[in-house]
Length: 166
Length: 128
Image (cartoon, rainbow over the protein chains, first blue to last red):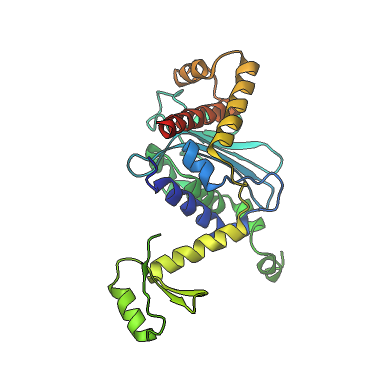
């Protein structure tokens, strides 16, 4: 039976994205965000978030609503503006040797790492430590907008950019 | 959201706020039979504003019925099953056993399959 947690979760993600809409290219035809019924019926969330610098995050997760919402069977794949994969972050049970198993982060096209080498800022924020519990769509979006300077710069409102002479 | 409905259209504002602050739920007062004044706790109001803003700023897919979502998901699963020549159940078992590589379509297939199972369960419960 629906317990309201999925809808509450859905609106938490949606309002978070709205607060960060300055970073997002919501008018891009590939921008995709589900409606709340789809999330509740399927207990899944699939979204394609386009950033203003042309990069994009494909997010897909299954949601366990028995206690606090928990994402499992998830994958977040971030592509740069040229369509090159920057990182996938997922919980496929393929890498049993890493300490954060099954949660893991790949760097680049093929390498598999446990998420400690993305950048100093991410490491300082404890991103890799949090890998153990997995991440949510809002946290991943925040991570991208906070830690990837290209996104931060290009998605800054135009009037602030011109004030700085850029 | 449940609300306490007051049938006192001429209630004073101060008295209304007093009643609302004692109520465990939002209080509404019909005015002239056409308008309604709703008094919300600040936190609920902020949440309502945030949701209204999200609806304005984030384009969301149009709503469908459960049966429509279910049919759409089944179509997607059939497409994957045909392409990779295995059932979704077999795919899921093999992927979770790390017998299949991590590739983007497999991540999508996995989530679609979970959605299918959840919707099928919901539809079965609705028929009981």
